[in-house]
Length: 404
Image (tube, rainbow, N blue to C red; front, side, top):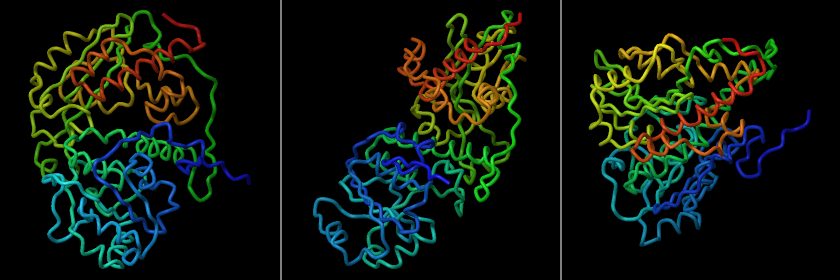
């Protein structure tokens, strides 16, 4: 069997390379990652990914660091206090109380058992002042089991901590793009193959490309693409365990393809605002808590939507959540992600991945999206833009006869 070609930069097989998603983000904090040797060759590890994004970072592999020139250099810098990002007695919550002085932040990378061993084997490392944090949301690391839902990957931890240290929680969010792309592609591979050991390709019937749903092609309908964000607390948080808790739509955006009419609105949650929502939705906390009321959102949306609309979304979670809240959604709805999988005869990856493969990444944005981003509609506005491009591509390239 011929070995798969690897990308020299990210070390992943070329078909699942995530380099196009990488961003270079300078940091005032020096980051030093000490990686357990058994973690070095993990194809789904995140430490190497983080090092590719952070120019002011170092990645070292080994078990014994105490008596090395590296440790001597880290501990002798009078301009930068060295701290260990690792939970323990007396650890400072660095997100809640970020220090003002520049730091050298040492991170141990590996499974929790491996990280614990690294700290135990290096007394000088273990003696460093410790910092930790309470994750605001569950980890997105769906392809790797963690001991607790509240544990984050190395990359997710750095995004959160560096954002707190530099007073800008969104600055390092682009580091999540390659992380999410890697996860989605890994999950796509798991759907395609029956098991990581046998790697036998599933026997999937490959139908000829069929006609699109009538709702998507009929002249009696208008297509409305939608994208939303929810106020959602972490699964292990006390807020989520309260009786009557539910996620709430806080950002709702839409574009009617035929006319260019757009809808963008931020609504304040009825429940307690999650501290992680602004970070993931790329909006400010102020814009969320000062947003419209729930009734104003539902009323404005009812005035926008029409019975002849067909709702186009990437997945079904956001529309289902909005419908549960009492939103007036048209009966005709299309999950564009599921449709894309049928038309492409397999997995399509993330919304961003699929748009890039279709060559839609360079299209000039609609003015409404630029206005939305300026007004703080964040990720929902950007994803809506990509969804409209994908939907238009599907409609215009479908070779089957259009039915009215």
